[in-house]
Image (cartoon, rainbow, N blue to C red; front, side, top):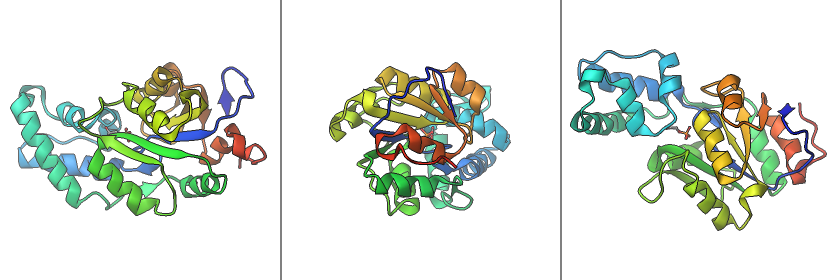
Length: 233
Ligand SMILES: O=C(O)COP(=O)(O)O
């Protein structure tokens, strides 16, 4: 674990990103968008390409996946609609929680740590995944992209979740796998925890405001007030 300021401050609550942090959804998203592209006779992409395309919401994902010449607003809208339809049918073919995530959530549950999810994934998909994979975990808020808040890295939604939970933003860990997440955390005044197992990797995280880099989910526990005695490993 690498903490840049060496502080011993402990935190009380955790706000999690979803894609690339709790769940490895890469293949189901990539396969679905590739199927949509094939229907339009556009070229597909590798899963490594999708690691870079995912993170700023579905509109941006589809825009990045389309060839430059195909990026009219009308075409993007039609392709988003079709990609969503395909993904809704194929959301759960290859998706898995990352190793150690279920154990982490159980430990947080036992420690009564307030938890929430904030994703740039469309809200209906976000709720569906969390309900399917983490039925035993109490998330006080599960929020995906919606019409009420701008997408991350705008901090408005993260701040609203802190307000709902009734804790100051500075008492939160914000745990994510991308530059967008690290930027959101810092803009919201939350402690940015970057995960080494996600879609983007440590370099991007450290360059975008990551305060603590973790390589295993259990390394999050000692950062929390409730779990100071926890032994990462
Ligand atoms: O679907 C996206 O764009 C990213 O979703 P995330 O915020 O859970 O990483």
